[in-house]
Structure formats: structure tokens, C-alpha cells
Amino acid sequence: MEERPSIPQPDTSSKTESADSRGTSPSGFSLLTFLLSTITSLRSMIASFETLIDSLKKSLDDLTRTLASKEQLLQEKEAKIKELEARLGKNSQNSSKPPSSDGFKKPPPKSLREKSGKKSGGQPGHKGETLRQVETPDVVVDHTPSVCSCGTDLSLLPGTVVETRQVFEIPEPRMIVTEHQIFEKTCPCCHKTTRGETPPGVTGPASYGPRTLTLLAYLHHHQMLPYNRVRETMEDLFGTTVSEGTVERAGQLLAEPLRLFEEAALDTLRVAPVLHADETGFRVERSLHWASTFSTDRITLYSLHKKRGREGLDQLGLLEEFFQVLVHDCFSPYFTYEGIVHALCNAHLLRELLAVAETEHFVWVTEMTRFLLDTKDRTDLPLTPEKAEALLAEYRNILARAFQEMPSLPEKKKGQKRVKHTFAQNLALRLREHARAVLAFALLPKVPFTNNLAEQAMRMIKVMMKISGGFRTFEGAQLFLRIRGYTDTLRKNSRNVFVGLTAALRGAPILPSCFSG
Image (cartoon, rainbow, N blue to C red; front, side):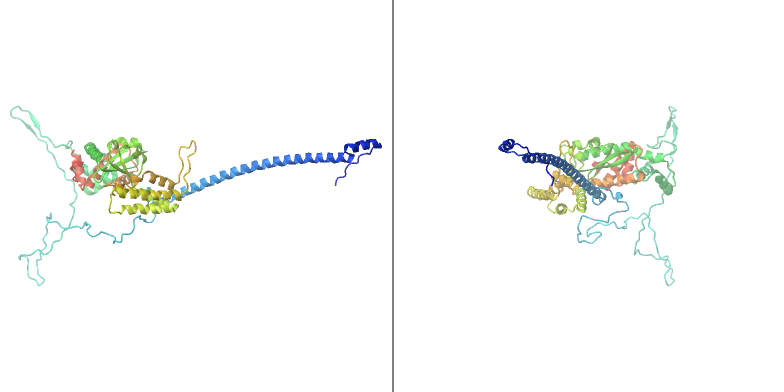
């Protein structure tokens, strides 16, 4: 304990009394000084502690903000990881990716359809394609016995046909050369010389006929053989060497006649009750263009444009004058056309539901998949208004459960143009926004469950891209699409493609009005 300093004592009693009378002794002054000093020290310490507390509070706030920032960053990274995992998990069976993108990691077959219990192969009543005999063969060869097993001569005896066997064979391919000799005659009256006239197409010393030119166009544009393989085919089959220019000219001769078909097809598509649409990338002149298809079960038509959106779709002038049902894959520019009733491709939606089921495992995804497939199998489609409302109510209930099961949708912040949602949330939002378009196959007559008709029309376009890699000119690409639309239409109507191309080359293409049904 610290020793207090001693204070000298005065000799006079009067001063002592005076001091005592004031209530303060010399030892009291020392105690008061000590207390005041202690109080000052304590105040200084309190101030230091307060400063330290403020500093610690500030550090704690900084750490809290850093932790919140790190937590938000962690959530963003987790969301990004999920997004990347979902992207890596996509293939041709759970997304719109083509089968060719699967590479060597092609997934095993996985069908959304359940087993029907029927045996594989043709079902009872299915029309087969068995080769059958014809009533009037081109050549008849008799096989008569000439000698009996006992040695008796049978050559002069009449016989009876007991069995016939027919062999179907193509004739030996060869080029037939027709020479057109042009004569001149001199009139005995006016002595004027008149020359004979050749048929159209016979314009030079040597030229190919319409069937040969049709075959070149058929091989190159319909069977999609490259120029060199067309040349090899002609050499192997007919012993004739054709140039690349001849193959190209054969296609160009079809351009103008098929414009008539294109105009007639447009008029027919404008009044079709159900129209299918799709689009795909198309490389032309070393840049990405977009090919669009508009088709029905009878007609296929293509268009080509540098842009994919509304500007590209408007090129044909079809959708501006179409007011029926349009089946598509939910491409947003289609919704900008007024007066169109939309129907969405449920095959796309089922693939997206499968992708969510494989990554998120939500219950609502299974419910929605089962609901769509069960609705497709109903036998009372299209539904009456009362049944349709009940179906829509069940559909909306599934989506209501979906938004309860999934994380809550993030709110749009001030100045934010678009809120980022997960893949599952985007799918659920799209299903909610386009409820009637999703269920159009059940609500409207003649509306199919999928958009396979348009996707099948696009399939050969993608095959051509894989074969050639692209087109050198816009005109060449446009010509290919025009010919392809014509030949696909012929196929849909069970018409011979070669005969139809020959007719078109002669200036008389088969128009949609010629098709029955």
C-alpha cells in the first residue's frame, strides 16, 4: 500500500480550532486529493474502454458485413455450381440439344412412355411392306423339263404351270443418246429456205435431257450428295462424267418453277387450321443465318434470314396473316403476333422436366410429368368446357405446390432489369404464364401433343449442315431450302419425288391444289 505524505502540524491552537471548526483536517486534504486523482484516472480508463468498445463494435460490424458478403458469395457460387452441373447433365434426352452433341458419352435410351404390354414389332392390322408378285411381269421365262427321270423325251409334250417365281431387278443403267437432225427445205415457189425446229432444251451440239438434269438435282439437293459424289455416281452408273457446273445448273433450273409452288404453298398455309413452326441455325457465307420452317401434315415450307427474331419470321409474310393455331417451342417472337392461338410443344417441356428431376428432385416435377402424360392418353379429347376448367384447375394446383416447394422467388431490386431465377423456377414460371398453350392439345381440336412435325422438317436441314458445313452463297442456300420444301411436300402426299422434280424442271411443278385430302 502506498505511503501517504506527512503534513507538518502547526503550533497554534487557534489555527487548529479554526481548522477543526471548518471540518477539514490536514489528513482530509490528502484523502480528497487522492480521491480526485482516482476519479480522474477512472474517467480516463472509462474513456479508453469506451473508445475500445467503439472500435470493437466497428470491427464487429465490419466482420458482420464481410461474413454476409462471403455468405452471399457462397450462395452465388453454390447456385453457379448447380447451374453448371445442370448444364453438364443436359443431353439430347432431357433438353433441346441434338443427339450429335452427346458425343461418346451418349446416355442409354430413356423413354418417357411407359410399357404398353404389347410385343415389339408390327401390331395386328399393321400394313407391311412385303415384296409381292405382280400380275403382268415384263419378262416371262419358261422352265420346262425336257427329259423324264426314266429317260423318256418330254420336249414335245404340253406342260402345265404349277408355280411361278418372280425376280425384281433394275435394268442395266446406261445413257441413251438421241440425235436430233435438223433438216432444211427450200420452197419451190418463193425459194425460201426453212429449217426444222427442235424441242425445248435441245439448244447445243450436246446437252443433257430433263431426266438427267432431274437426277443430278435429286442426288445433290434431295439425297444431299456432294458434287464429287454426284460425279462418281454418274460415272459408276452411266459411264458419264458431269462437271460441278452442270450439277449446279440443274438445281438453278428448278428455282423459278418452284417459286410458283412456294407462292401456292403460302396461300394454303395461311388458312391451315394448325400450323407448325421451328427454326435452326444455318451457316451461309461463313456466318450464322437462321432457317425457319412452317409446315402442316401436307405441306413444308422454309425461309432463310440473317436474323432469328421477328424480322426473320416476317420474311415470308405468313404469320402476319395467320389467325389459327400455331404450334411452336415457346420462342418469344411468336407471341408478338396478334390473333394467333398458341400451342406449345410438350416434348420440349417433358425433356426440361426430366432435366430438373435429375438435378433438383422436386416432387412437383414428377406430378407435372405424370399429369401431362395422363392427359395425353385421355380418350375424351378435346375436352368439354366443364372438363377443361377442371383440368386447368388441377394444372394450376400442381404449379401452386411447385412454388411452395421451391425456394422463394427473388425480388427485383431497384435499377435491376431482370431477376435471375433458377432453371426450375424459370420452367415453372413459363408453365404458369402459358397454361392454355401448354394444354392446347387437350382443349382444342386437331392440336397435337408435340411439335414433331416441324422438328422432322428441320432434321434433314441439320443433316445437310453436317455434310457440307455450310453454303458458300445465300442464293445457293435459298435454292436448297426451296427444293427441299418441295420434295418434302411430295413425300408427305405420297408422290414420287423424281417425277415431281422432272415436272418442275419442265415448268409445271405439282401444286398443293393437286393433293387430295
